[in-house]
Image 1: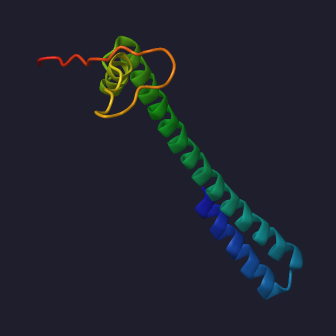
Image 2: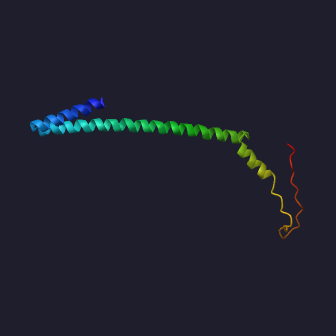
Image 3: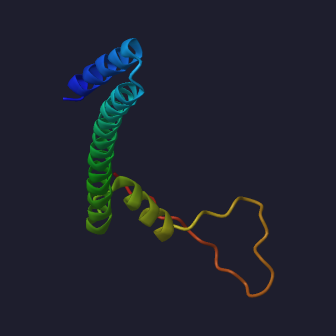
Length: 112
């Protein structure tokens, strides 16, 4: 439909120019601009639809990751929990912090 408006607008503009009818020329320019505005609106609606779909996909992905973390199935979350459970070993030759004596820590190594 916008192509029809655009063509009609151009024809009216040309007719207005040929006959010297300023009102007809303005009417043609208005119809042509209307066609362009309709096209811009259509493109903006399509872009908005694409963004809505992208957002929905990201929402789904985030929800899946959060569910995996809660279930304990997310590998990175499992690694972080393991790191929290196993403290870092002390480096050989390092002095313990001053204050209360510290028992030497041992790190359990899982046999997998």
